Length: 191
Image (cartoon, rainbow, N blue to C red; front, side, top):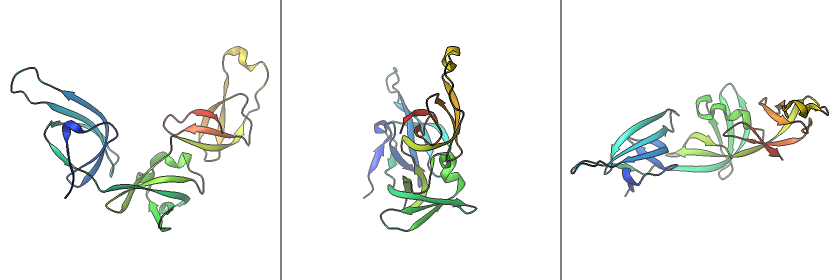
């Protein structure tokens, strides 16, 4: 029997299914009425995992959702071409191809052989989950000159191996590996 989740028990980062579509809860707001007989309402900010659309919807506290058949499997990034981005499942060694909508801007953080998590819904790949930080090599940056810190500007632009451009501290040189946050797209330290 499929497990049911009541709306009142949904928490941030939980997954649930409505009408055969998987959703990811981004935020929860519970409003309890002060009048007698009023119903408790649950406002969910949620992401449709198939279309990637984000929206708010209000439910009654007793509304029930199905638990989705959603799994995350490790996969290594192989390459991208006109058909999409190709990944090899690390458990079954089969190749999965994800289209541009499923991958989104994740290509800014992917290098060949990198292990990420692919989300599968009912056995089919629907998207991917990046780690919070990735390590990328700096392919181009201006050399930092002594005395540049006097102006208060202590960062400089750097181009990374995936083509992503970020601001890095002056001491970072070409060829070095840096940690980049996949959420903020900012420098997070030396690798």
